[in-house]
Length: 425
Image (cartoon, rainbow, N blue to C red; front, side, top):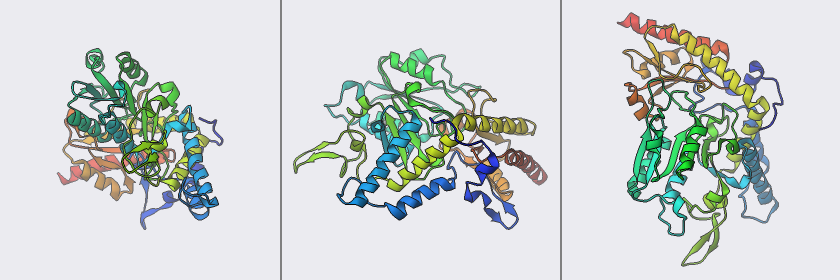
């Protein structure tokens, strides 16, 4: 992580995002509070991807001509930049994927491949256990459900306590000598809860389990360093960190990646191909079959530049102040129940709430009529919503370009929504 190269001036930052001037209709400016689903992109990211497409676009690693070399340099240079942003010891530990979901499926599929040449600690089989948490996004739950189904392993989970944090009181009994994997989110996309990575990693490693971290909601919002976290594998999505859609990444310790069998096979990931058999390239190429998302990787590298330029400590402080303002405002509105912890070091800027007696889709429609764009529904976390007895929530998620005025408008919009439905009663 580099030192900030600019002052954290929200109005100057907003000028970098062309879409923020958009009017939803002639009288309604847009207030975008849905970065937790997909973040907007600054001009610097857009320009980087367009510049690549206008100047250097070609297939990577497949040609001897100069354009292929320039494209390859851009792609591999992007890998180096992303590795630097993550604090990865080597760019060879960064695998580009379609998104965090694909990265997590890559790991789950590889661990369940049944390849007898794979070391025992990287093979999940019948009798083994997989541990997740009750607050997982479906992307970090369903792949492990499927792995358990395919292999006969048992899926277990750490429950969520009434205070919206993980209940670790039975962690010792949940992590056993049969546990092969502990997969958990760094930050809940619903609750905003930041989980105790060090505690979970230490407990998992004590029983020989691999740790898989879903960092899609955390890496764009706080200082992030894979080396200091101590986890074994990390999944991220570019479109949640001011980057393009269609690209994510898996970071993994190289000694693990070089022993894991591939997820997808075909061109670019091979070492030798004969009619009867093939051997596979070393990581990261082993996990990047086919033509990769080249321009998207260039855009993602530019997003890393942009975030580092702002300084992740400053990003975290800005979003923490916005979260405090939102939570304080919502606390004064009758009928609103925040589904998430109070502000603390273990809390970040995804603010979800339930409005008594009203479906979140209806709440979202009223807010949208005011130009306030939020997320509604179960946010790909059905089990978590069932845990707290709600079928869905309304979520505001803040970003580097969110202003205090927008947070105030959101709080006022929620109050207006309560009054609106009250008038209909």
